[in-house]
Length: 65
Image (cartoon, rainbow, N blue to C red; front, side):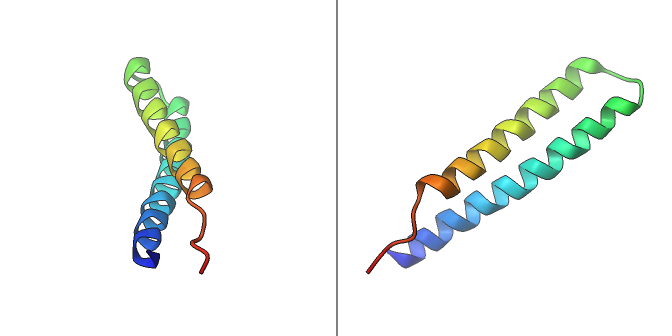
């Protein structure tokens, strides 16, 4: 049971960290001129990834013995 929790926590943490960093990067892209539609897709994907990671970490509690 603890191994399954570790795998889920690892996936959730990775998604939360990478999603947050991708969100910051996509917000920095707004400072240079370019395609707005592509930036919105990247920002939307990164926000979904970050939110899903944080929700996964929140909804899967540590297994008690």
